[in-house]
Amino acid sequence: MFCVMNVHNVDMTLPSGTQVVSRVGAVLRAVSSSMPGGLGTSDVARIAGLARPTAHRLLASLAGEGFIDHDHRAGRWHLGPELYLMGSVAAERYDITSVARDSVRALAAETGESAFLSALRGNETVCLVREEGSFPVRSFVLSEGVRFPLGVASAGLVILAFMSDSEIERHLAKTNLPARFGQHHADEEVWQRITSARTTGYAVNPGLLVEGSWGMGAAIFDSSGQPAWALSLTGIELRFSPDRQPELGKRLLEHAHRVSQRLVSQPPARG
Image 1 (cartoon, rainbow, N blue to C red):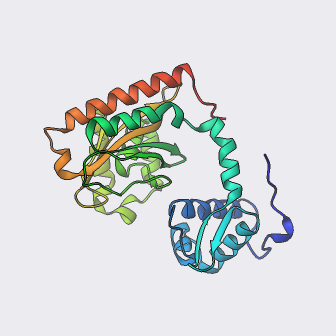
Image 2: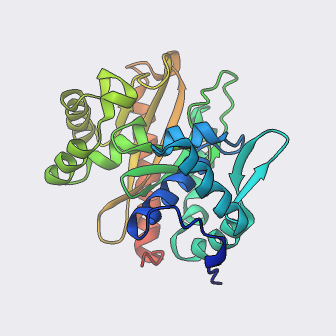
Image 3: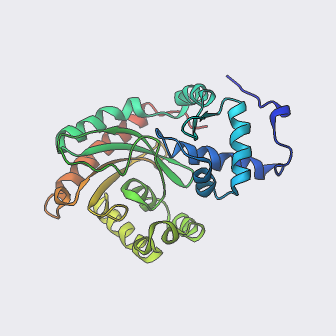
């Protein structure tokens, strides 16, 4: 299914060419990161790095095409129905949730923690699946649709860890993680966590996003051996003690390997 934007609805005061495409992508990613609560125009502008009038013009144009919905009563923007239809088609080529969902559920059942599947998209990870564990105190840092840059949170850290050193250096050079996430995400500390992840096979986020909320992740590799997804667990610090981490890491690695092996036998098309 193809959807072509009506040129008569496009705000001609916007910049032309690739800059518009880049800005539209930034707006759509900003709105998707807010699911399910939606975002106000000022928040979209801030996250997308745009002036508020520019963000509003783009949002209005996207709403006219069905890519964005506007809740006029609440003054908030949400992803629109056209993206749902396109996503349904794209899922046939890129979605591995049918292959990985059993492992996400099993991790939650085996550990009692919240379990997740995240995918690499550009220089970010996006959460695709969340499964609650039985432990009554939970962490709500991650949910479906939430994005983090590589190197942030356990899923993004473990995927980054298994890239080449040159790829890591390029990513860190163009992504100012400390400015957004604090000095614990300075290059030196990220490299320390990468080294640890390469040693153990799994990454640990020791409450760096929300104090007291810990996470661990293991990479899932595509058929060419590249890290493209991750399984992760999150919970309170008490549940991620040094004594328990090896057991949680072992379970993550077992399930990540299982999913990777399944993908070798039935890989999703990726372009």
